Image 1 (spheres, rainbow, N blue to C red):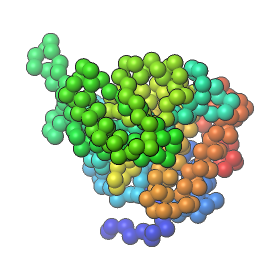
Image 2 (image 1 turned 180 degrees about the horizontal axis):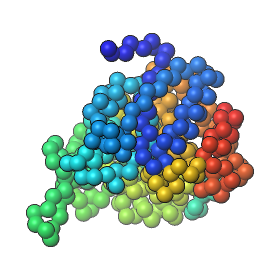
Image 3 (image 1 turned 30 degrees about the vertical axis):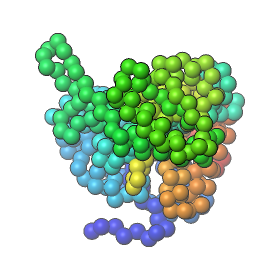
Image 4 (image 1 turned 90 degrees about the horizontal axis):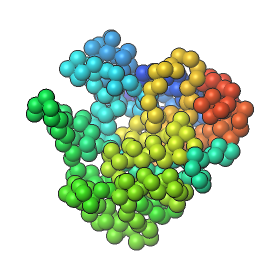
Length: 361
């Protein structure tokens, strides 16, 4: 029977994923339960299997029932997946992350890059920016075609790829970027390659310019993707909100978070009109899985972003406060060498770090 939760409850679907996914998901749930007990958020968790666990049990890495559960939930917490190691699609090896983004129309991938106190940036000055990445089209082969992959080989010596850029997707990701900029420092950098990809990136650039005209309070600049990669290394501190297409955003966000301090700290939210998925920006790191070595901050920070997204939609200050408390606890924990995980030069494993974080809440 369909669930009929009271308005005070928040139903979250938990998908652990592969590699370090179960460990950092467990840490994230511990933090969420702790903040729930402090603020009375009404969090409820439902679990489902994806990835290799689901493949073994049901012959696919993303069972149909999981999509239905994701649609019914108020939000989803998604652990990293090892989709590059999955079998072919014909043998059940589909990418859960890509399917959720496409089927739930999670068009905006919001990826902050932030430098923490006493954790110096890799290059130059402290960083505080957000990459707003279009999430549903571009060169990604699982999002560019209605049926069949976006890559194909006419013969054994030739591979072709289809890139899709639409006016609808470009307009709405630009709108999301400018709305976010209005909440921050009111600056947007549009990243493109319209000097070469004149039609596809040209359409994206035209759409961002159209949206920009509705936000005269926001400073706008345009940069070519190759120049932008160099400029981030030179001085990432001068950027506020960066908006770009799918592949460029995927690359620039990883670069920006590593420049800020560490990819292990990189939170990420996949958001649409009706659904949102919290997802660590990094991969599944199978080489350290099960060893209590993983830094859980990326998924914990992503869960905080999900709480803030829900708080805005519900006009629920407690959810926004929960997000702020989690983020403040993370900043406090990584700000001290003695309470960091090993990847940040500290002595703590996943479980011990999580307990420190809960104490700081």
